[in-house]
Length: 514
Image 1 (tube, rainbow, N blue to C red):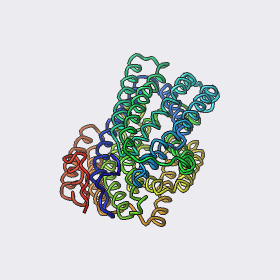
Image 2 (image 1 turned 90 degrees about the vertical axis):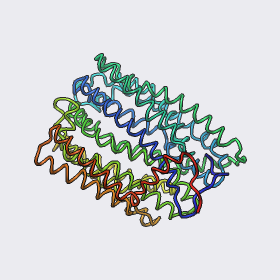
Image 3 (image 1 turned 60 degrees about the horizontal axis):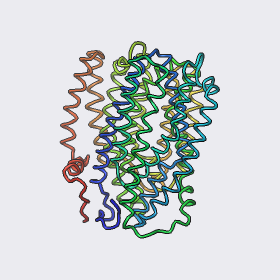
Image 4 (image 1 turned 60 degrees about the vertical axis):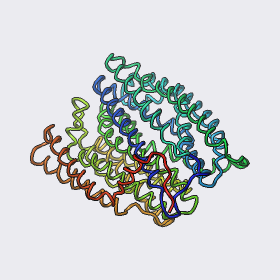
């Protein structure tokens, strides 16, 4: 829907129903993504040797770094500029922003894919300690699909600028993830290691076509009645905001995934497979963070464009409360039952239990800071965000190089944990100083207390008295869930859970002004 002709919330009041709709839809997609990615890793770890699995995970990490570079930050730039244009009644500029973004991304992705193809043997030597196995073949297949993946991500980002979450959820979160999981399971059952790269990257062809068609229809619908807008200066405006995000997105992915490559290079692919399996649970929680971030980003851009700090604070604190409500139970249960969680990947993976413990506790702090990067970015402070992420990335790499040779994969986890603290504390201070915003509202603190009691203290007591077997995990999870549900119902006003219920009942009707 466009801003023009629609009833908007009163100034100072956030459109929480819209956030609830987008957040709920994204979280449904995130649940599918989390399950699919977890099962995909399990299929690879159970279908192939730890060494082959580690080589495959290292190759996909290199591909994802290349993809982040090729997107040139347009995944954030398009959301920001299209949402801002809607807020300022200039929806007609949306098509100009898309035309500005797509050609450079296509060129960058093609060049990046060509570099990955040409330097695959050298990258194999750098990335894998010992025999690289199928690494070169994996990376060259992935390189072919890199421009397709970049176009898919760019088109889906543009649709989110219109506050439309369905394309991302249906095409990416459900469509690609499901097809990818099916393909990986089939290849794993067949034992065809050489086809892993094609099974993993091939589904991007589906998402690219579907995303492009959806964006084309959306642009026609949203801009058909919009007044023509001048396109002069669009490129300068767009890239002036976006170029820091290009570097920051690359640094962000290095921060999230590059330690897998470092572990493979310094300790070997077997340890890389164990580390990937251990960190998979942490990334499942990050998917929830991304889902809420995609829903809140366009709204933050709109309210900050209008200078409405009260609405921005409401959005930020509500999204943070919901994020804690969703992710803390997972991280707390993982901290209590890490060895059990890793047994699901097969024999030998329990050695990553300490990695799960370190990162689970770190993520409790990271998530209670909320969508701190999104707030900073949607306020237009992309250079600040760039500096923050590059700093955190540097801290991570230096810490990894020091700690991994000394204490193995736990050192990689410790390096990541230190970097995550830096990545959240610095922008938290910046938005408090520059925007007078913080995430610690009544709902956030309520959610943290309920989760800590239901999934922290209770499961820990069960673990200490009954061990970490299946029965203990089931008892702790079921009892904690009942207690959590009762607490959420009791404190539903503080948690603003009524907005979720109203969003489900109210469909797409606009929030009434007051």
